[in-house]
Amino acid sequence: MATIKIKQVTKRFGRHVILDNVTTTLEAGKIYGLLGRNGAGKSTLLNLINDRNFATSGEILFDGEPINNNPAARQQMYLMSETNMYPKRTRVKELFKAADRGYGDFDFTLAHRLTNEFGIDENSMVDNLSTGLTTIAKLITALCVKADFIFLDEPTLGLDASHREMFYRELLKTYERRPRTFVLSTHLISEVQNLIEHVIILDNREFKVDQPSEELLAQAFAISGPTAEVDAITKELPILGSHEIGHIKTVYVVQPIDAMQLATSSVTVKHLDLQTTFIALTDGKEL
Amino acid sequence: MATIKIKQVTKRFGRHVILDNVTTTLEAGKIYGLLGRNGAGKSTLLNLINDRNFATSGEILFDGEPINNNPAARQQMYLMSETNMYPKRTRVKELFKAADRGYGDFDFTLAHRLTNEFGIDENSMVDNLSTGLTTIAKLITALCVKADFIFLDEPTLGLDASHREMFYRELLKTYERRPRTFVLSTHLISEVQNLIEHVIILDNREFKVDQPSEELLAQAFAISGPTAEVDAITKELPILGSHEIGHIKTVYVVQPIDAMQLATSSVTVKHLDLQTTFIALTDGKEL
Image 1 (tube, rainbow over the protein chains, first blue to last red):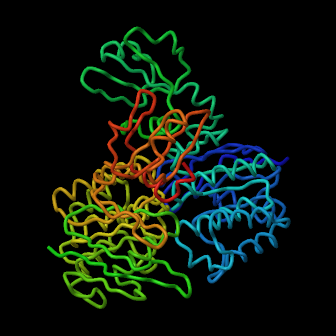
Image 2: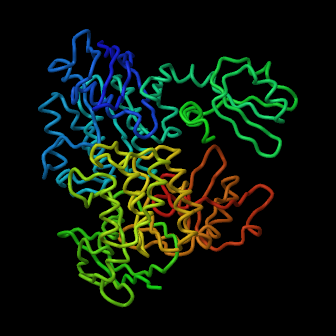
Image 3: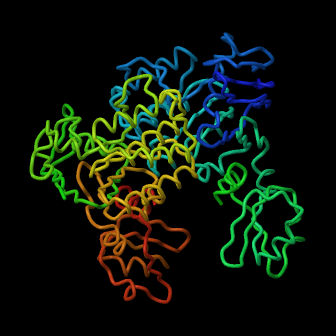
């Protein structure tokens, strides 16, 4: 199966550098999490990969060929984003038909089941739906379209808690039945921790993390205990963030350490979840 | 200070009933949470209150006078929503100036501090900002505008976790300095639990809950223990939802009960948080 290679891509808007020489590969049949603070350039990257905008330099290859004006690549990539790519007064069922015309083999059976479960009338105009239901109509299209790379930019924008749960469940179901690549860009990190196999964190114009979730979380720790002891133990470590309450200090590190060895009778070393790891890596001060 | 009275308001779109004879009062100087599933009609209600749409029947009064075409009412009400009410190619600083022209006495000092803290250039075109930063620009406007009733429809759409935290903190700060009414409509219920003083839950076209948060949470319980015992204890109670794992059953009720009296050595009775209470009331099956 194909891969998408992003090679030394830089994107500037005027004097503003959004992406600075980033390189990675998106493999077939994996669920990626593309994480980053507001304004980090996640949507810009997704637009570049999907040929909705041009890189200032560098190249993006689908199966070895540049993605620009490449119908074979376009055929295998689908981007769901806040920007609507359909004309005004489009009905939900017309979204599905358009995806079927563009990509072929649209899964109408799944689409009908999902509109029914989420309570959407396929005859509704998309623009007349509420924010959350518009997102759902677009998500259903993305889950049923026949493409090997599905990019979901903020897939849960405006979704209530039950609908978010339903979406995560349906994503996993369809992924198991027909493995393909999903790239999820989201701010509800704790909710997708168990979905994501590979994490890419965009920070300060670069990929700060690009590795399997398990590998990242295996080396993300909170070290907590009496301040003097914690300081002594961690003085050689690159500390991402810390806070102190009374004389108890907690420091956050993402580093291959031997947790068993560092812990003492008064100092605990605990694994971090993905959300906390993300905050430590991108904004340690906030912890 | 003024109040807003919503009296027997019904809204239909064609044959579709969105709101069915709803009545409530929004008081001065309170933080309200307007909660509801996707498509429940929250945005419709906010649009009616802010005279962006007409009720099919019933009336909405500001200080005793109908809000329709009522400049004195309009002057005291500000709605921040996904629909953008500014022209294309508007700069962030122009949003602020427009709010100053419309409402007077815009808090430019606070606005400058907030754009700085959130990392927004006031010279940016709003349409060029990312989803999250657009939301932030609109939120800053809403926090700095001089009006007694501020309606925030999905205030954290697209905001990352740190920015959501910053927003909640700034909302409380400005509220303490200048008490006014905020109505928050959001799906991130667990995050706003501590902000909200009064909860309105819109479900099935009606207000299912309209009461102080404390009062609601004081009677929201999970009763958990061996199935037979739990069934016996709860057989007279209106059960909203339940689940069973092995022989342990948990049922959810929102009912003034005596928790101490119901609990036994094997049955626990625990208070629910707002998110779980909401799900139990609107979609018990999902629990």
